[in-house]
Length: 89
Ligand SMILES: [Zn+2]
Image (cartoon, helix red, strand yellow):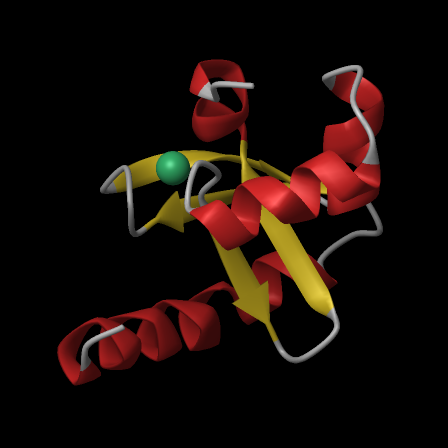
């Protein structure tokens, strides 16, 4: 990850924090830096449940770059629905 990209991510995280706190819903509309647009994001647990896969597969997708994600603080991870729909197994 380049320094430029990292800076971009941090800016977005700060702006979206209120959205996440606004409710306890597991999804949120967040601007995906990979898609370049606002998309629905799911927690890893919900992503696994909604896309009929396992948490391991979700984390593997994050690791290999096939899934878009945004990390809000250390323990809040959201997965881009677009990338879930387009992911290759
Ligand atoms: Zn995305």
